[in-house]
Image (cartoon, rainbow, N blue to C red; front, side):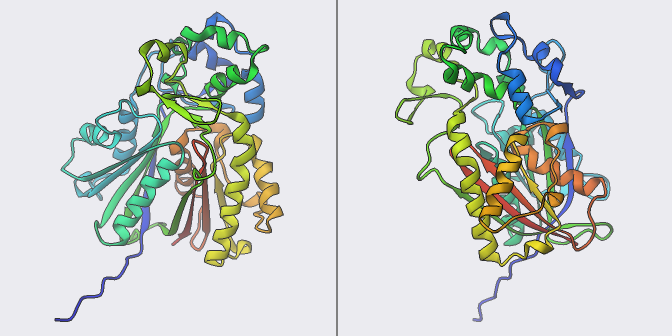
Length: 385
């Protein structure tokens, strides 16, 4: 009996959507919503905002700091926005959700989103991590359609960071934050991410055929790599970091230790971040240019997920040094308007390009997504058809 040859399919993103909660929050309004730790303005806020250049962001909180949406609710809204009468949600076959900030440990984020959608049974996967988790969901959806497991799939990136950044979450250790001058590294690591992160959700629909009308985005490849084999933990939550670089997780700590150390707040080892986030990602880009024989001169758009504008010119210098430079006029970001929404940020850039008419047939796009949790990187190459 002759074996059937299985052929990998082409995969197209046919629709992109987003959900941003409430109204944009200006820099001067952040602390009135998130609250002041120990009742005093942050010493680090102005410096951090000066570096990241973010002007507005979104919070799933009202002006009193009360929750208006869960992460799962925002994600479900973004997914719903993909569908209409022409392509109803009852055709959905797979849902892959990436997030750093699920609403609970269990059930997983994808199951909670599916529960809100209340559509038919679908295959689920949840990727939980930092920024690359959205691209892990992206790749799972891509691979499912590519190998013929499903004819369509949705992937999402979403965050609700704001609830983690409320001042009340830091009150048990206000002494640490008050002692910014005496112990600046410890205090800065706790305060840093309060002025970096924001909320929202975005979603992509993958299909095995392009749109009959309008543009589609053919996903040519997705590459993801971790450098945790030789780099220590940099961004973390649910743990404390020991002097030797190891971490101690919340399950091995007492409730008293949880409170005293703000164990469940996001923390960033900014020394490691500055030293490692750019060189490793730039080297991976050089390796991919060689692997896929990419002609950079023909690249139309470069979409780097920047946690801060501070890294723009450091990335620019490093990829130039390695001989794989991408001119700034090809870069597209919306960080300063949307904020750093972690796993959702790569989707927001792609969604804006497609839905605001910035693309044309034949354009090529490279997405770059660094993750500082323990240093992972994701790249994707896309062709507009």
